[in-house]
Length: 215
Image 1 (tube, rainbow, N blue to C red):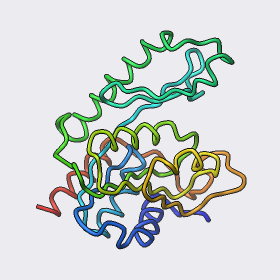
Image 2: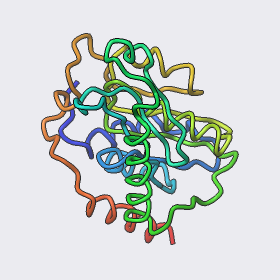
Image 3: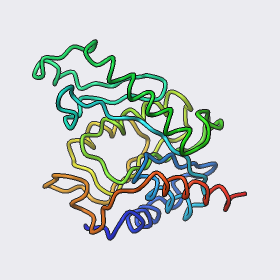
Image 4: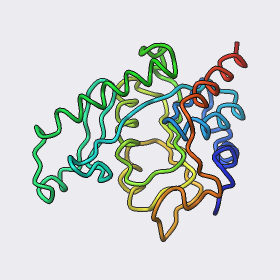
């Protein structure tokens, strides 16, 4: 399955998600691309949308190699099996973790105007991204959401993800909605005709529009 763009992916996901939240649902989207996908879901299902901003921790000297993720309260999730291979200890990553915590705070304020969330406790929460590769940031988002809001139902909705990653994430959620689980997966972008980068300004505009529409 190839998606035209993130809007197309969001519309297709929305059709699969119809009726999954019996009451009081909210979409938490992972910026930046996940916000475009999430906005279509929120619009179709009549839900509010907000952002959740876990950040990938890359290996020192090779930041493209994901070894974990951090959430805004500083909770970290690491793939410790890579530590020995890379000759790392957790204390080696303290600086990188602090750097990403500052970036999360900056983006929360940039996108939303504040760090604090409304009270989403006990609601049906749909975590959305534009696709998953390693799954570290999504895992961090799911566990943080479960701990922070204790949702009545926690759903992960993404257009595409590899099977091995989904196997790790499945036990973290009450429901998993994925449109494409390819046998050959190299990168999320290979399943989109248009996978151009979403800008900060687009994220801000989407959140403003959805807020205005619900006012």
